[in-house]
Structure formats: structure tokens, C-alpha cells
Image (tube, rainbow, N blue to C red; front, side):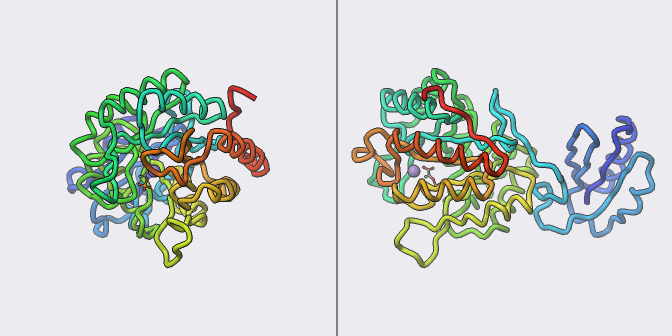
Length: 343
Ligand code: PEP
Ligand code: MN
């Protein structure tokens, strides 16, 4: 159930309601906005009558949320969530681009690629340091050494940093370096991990599971919000279908669907979504046209020798071209993409 309090309500009015609910054993999630405070009542609220709260002074409305995902839903919060990290605003009017290699391979590699993607207009540097792969015999990543290189590269080129965390025991270590924690597709329903991420300080980038429905994906985000962390970004990265031509099938329709059902931002990852370099640009165009609040793009300056995902990585020049095109598309739908530092 949601209880919306007017901006005239005093702390005491809010606390009175919280204590009534607390006595009855409910958890309360409080979200303080400019115009009102929203109290999210978590638990089996079937025994609560919204009318009991509607009569309180300063209560604008009280109603039940019908969706199984509560805190994540638009019913709970009607305005888009905007996540500000340093000088980057995610979920606002700018379509924010994250780019970089699949894996951090060396200090020199991440430094070079960071400069290239920053100059094309990317705001966030991506790269994996822990890379458990489909095969245990493939390259497994540089670990903490990679995180150090990536932080240095991100700081040098004024980029934020995103990297994948594989399990709950790694959160504390990776949080010392990264701005955003990526949850990989294969971990989307690792519920003990999601609960631990609810206690994390950093923003969570939640990739869609390879066979997850949109509802399951929303429920995974609910775990993180229910744990106390409201900073979640969805990322559509393709799902497994009967089609084998592409590595995955990028579900572009998930973008407007998530935006209808949730207030949280959604990005698209056409690199993993297609697995094929020359399909990344058209699907990036489509995602931006569909209203994605951001993109994740794999970029490598020597993809033939990349230690992972070379076949889907764009050359820096191609990435620059992609940025120019999505900038033009974003404008058509009243959004914008940052300019690069070089022309
Ligand atoms: C990645 O971003 O490099 C990655 C492994 O992504 P996913 O979890 O979507 O496969
Ligand atoms: Mn990859």
C-alpha cells in the first residue's frame, strides 16, 4: 500500500502513521520528494484498509499497489527516477552512453580505450575485471589489478566507471573502485546476491536474465529496492529465443514496457544483444529511437585480439559514428546525447 503525504505535513504527522504501521509489523519505505512524501507499506497489506489512512490530516491519498513489484512500480512513484552520480544524470533528458572493452586486459589498453570513448561523448567507462566465462578455460579477468587500472583511466578522462560484480562477497572490494555495479544476466535471479545489493551504497545496473520475463526482471529489482537501495538501472541485453543467427534477440519492446511499468531508468546493450559487430549500430539506433535512457556499447581498438567478445566490439571510429547517429536520433524525440570532446 502507498500513503502519500502532502508537503505541508510535519515530521510528527509522518511519524504518527509510521508508528501505527510499525506496531502492526509492517516495513515502511519512505521516499521524500519535493512535493510530497511517499510511504510504501511492505508486507501482506490485505488486512489494512486504505480508508483508515485517507482520513488522516495531510494524507493526500492511500491506495493499494496491485502490481507484485511494489517499490519498482509506477503506481508507487509516478515520476521518473533520476540517478545523479558526480556530474552525470541518469534517467533524465540525456541519453547516457557507457562504452569500453568487454574485459580490462592491461593498463595501456583501458587507458587508450577510455580516451577514445570519452572523446566520442561516452560518460561512463565499462569493463570487466572478474570474467567467469561460459567456459572455465577462457580468460577470467585481471581482478583487483584491473579495477585499479580502470579507476585510473576513468578519472583521467572524467568518466564514471561501471564493472560487474559476480557475488555478494565481492561487493565491498569493488565498491572501493566503481561508481556503478553491474549485475550480469546470469546473476539476475541470484536472490541472496540481490538482497546484499540492497545494502550496497552504489547504483546497480541490472541486466535482464537470458531467459527472464519482464515481470521476473522487475521482481529482481524489487529485491534490491526492498533492501533499501533505490538506485537501480535496468539493462535490456537480449534474450534467448529460437533464433540462432544472432547471439541473443534484443527485445527493443522491453524499453517502452519497462518505462510504462516502472519509474526506474532503462538502458539497452546492443553489443551483447546481437553479438555481431555490424548489427550493433542499427540496434543502437532502434534503442535510442524507442526511448532508452542510455546505451552500453563494447568498444575495442584491436578486437581481433580481444580476450573476450571481440566479434561484437566496435572499433573506436565506428563508435564515434554511432554516437553521431544516435545524437541526431535522440534530438528527434526531444532527448540529447552528449557531444564528444573532439570533433
Ligand atoms: C558484459 O557486460 O560483459 C556481460 C558479460 O554481459 P551479460 O551479463 O549481459 O552477458
Ligand atoms: Mn562482453
